[in-house]
Amino acid sequence: MTIQVTTLTIVQNRCANRRKCRSCQLNYPVVAGILILGSPSEQINVWDEVSDNPILNGVELRKLCDLLSEKRNVEAFSLLLTPAGRGNLLFRPIHQTSTAMAQDVEILRPCREKKSRVPLRIQWILNRLSCGRLQQSCQYQLADFILRHAKDLAATDVIRLFYGDFSCSEMANYFTFRFGQPRHLAALAIASIIKERSGPVLDLACGMGHLTHYFAWREEYQRQVVGVDRDYFRLYVAKNFMVPEADFICQWVDRPLPFPSLSFDSIFCSDAFHYFLNKAGSLREMKRVLASNGLIAITRFGNLEQTPNEGYELTAEDYDRLFGDMKHILLGEDELIEGYLKKRKANLELREISKELREQKWLSVVMSNEDNLFCNQGCFSEYPHGMGHLIKNPIYSSKQKASSNRLNLKFEFPSEHYAFEDQKYQSYTLNKLDISPEVLSSLNSGMRINDLQDLVEKFVLIGVPKKFIPT
Image (tube, rainbow, N blue to C red; front, side, top):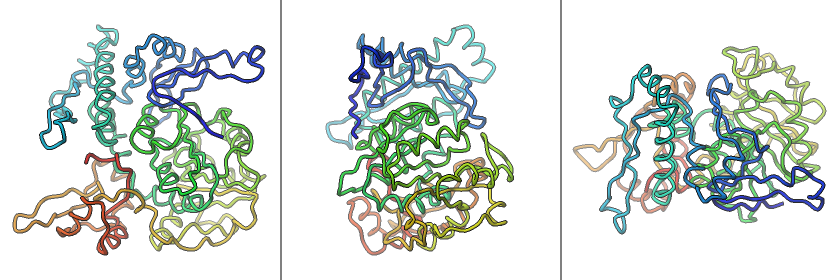
């Protein structure tokens, strides 16, 4: 099973009975490497980040196909960049020539001055008067800038541009500081079990591919990794900056999946299942495309008994009944994080739902028909969060010490909202520390020295994709 996609073009769905099959007469757009599936009249809507309700109608798929057939690629891309929050109508992506880079290539220098933002009421009036033309102009400039400078940008540049400068959204922090988050460690405790398997992996609601990157990192057997998400921009970042070797499809994740039965050895879904309205239908599809002895892992879905509530949560007992026709184990996030910090994988020994589990807000589940899977999985040979290109954890601000060439690091939450969501982060990290020149030079050269492993275990250094931060 292989999905072939090309950049900024159109693919047509065909089968042996295409003359009788109406769906095979549809064109599906592929924009910047992302295949978008749906009916011709379906819109790529913008969704509220908290309530998960649609807040703005997006472009129709037939419109994207028409634009691509007319070679209006930038316009097609721009229509998929509708701001996720309150758009900044004075946003202008600007750049300057960097003499430090080869051939003086132009690199990103975003306009981030908050004083330049339009007040909400004035912006609303401008939007009404211009019928959205100002926003469309901003979107086009952003799309043109990203496509022209993609080779010189990093994931964090594009995230900051779209979510930070253009959309005025907290999601910039969520994705920039995701590596090392408590929820990410809990997911890795289970993802590490999938990592050891050799078959194809499906990452549902993959977002920007933070965990897809882990599945695809240094795979000797070249297994295929496929990500599916409904948010186009996040998939664009995943494909073009985070995990270019993986395939990505933009569609609703709780709809029928576009894969043959028994296609995947492992299916993973993190931090999204409680937003699925059709949970039972989604599970049926997961089981359909799962191999006979495959594994389904769903991490961090909300427990209705614990507030605040998000999406369409269930109680632990209701989740247990939902998963009941397949052997499974429910786990709490606290247990997963505690085990991870001791270098332990998830303990999959079967057990009843406990009082402690009912009192946890965030739950996870592992399902499989393979009896041998449900046991204590042991320890990591190396921490999963250290796999990738090692960098200083972005959660640390840095300052050069005047008395030496050592770098002083300080743990700082990027916002009050982020601090509320990830309070546990500070419980396993250092508040302040200095990094020696040897560590800095080792990071810059890509080599590892003995001190680095200790800093990885303290979450001062983390592994990321090569194009996650600017070089």
